Length: 431
Image 1 (cartoon, helix red, strand yellow):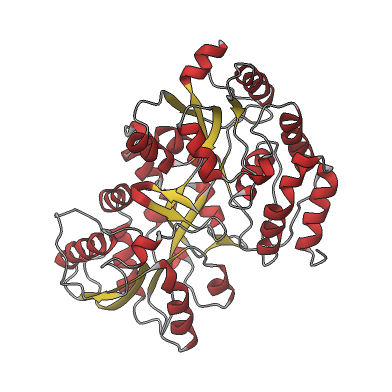
Image 2 (image 1 turned 90 degrees about the vertical axis):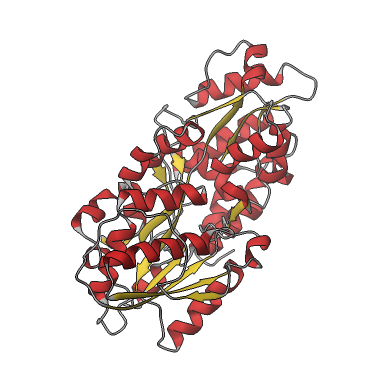
């Protein structure tokens, strides 16, 4: 689990931003609210205005304020759309998967659902294509990389809601001591800079490479994506390609040459980030919440953020997104659903929601609106270059599990090609 902004967390294994255990028991979970409830600050939005009907909406609690944010938004929407009633149900992340499973099995799916994965519902023909429930303006506003990740066979079924991405965090004081002027952009520069920092001694580590089970798939993906590789797509897993092998070989070289922490295979991201915060690691990949954590826990840390170094210097990041999706149900509510979704994704309304919850926007207008927010500027700049796990492939869970179990063995001398071949075997059911 990785801590989310404003004290949240997301499940890396499911590509969702589920709340911590604290959120699962807060007052915003497991509750239903009609459209007329909830305080709000008037926020202008765009919607149909002439729609009518009743909408049911099921969402998870990202934080203690999630329920209030939705209530306020629904109240404002109702001022412009008095003939549309929105019934809100907020569940904890611990419960929401079971709740939606029960609802879909009993033929009582919500009209709008907020969750991480959409593919199984799309494959069962339960969802509207996005183009049928939002205006062309909203459809075109989604970041292309997130829109592609929300599509199956060229049809978009998920509406990207909130995002997270990764960037390089670097210790400016250690850079100065090592005589490094700028953060690295290529692997060659990463290697040389990590070497200079490691040579400072006193237990200082050049680059933090957590390959423990917590998030080994994310750290490995940073290098795989950075070498033009991938884990595949919805149809095929491609773990042992030449690009992937070359990426893992570079990781092993950094380990073997003493540029990382000892035994990366036993190191998880969360505790290793704590070592970075304490000033003992020169460079490490982190997320937007890392900024908040440093400000709260180590405000004196002199650090910066930058694009993650890649083989050729072209930026890339590992992206994660949660989605909204619209269920067809009996089809009577399509006009009302469209009116609400167009209202929600209007720039002012949507940006207010994302910023309040502490995540990154998935729309181009949202990124523009938050461009001056210094703490997330690097992440916003990287969003268009985001690449994703092939989470719509049924073999991905086995693949990810094998990465988490096996990739750390490269720190003990295992051959990268053989390790990736074993991971490929897991994807094909032979592990």
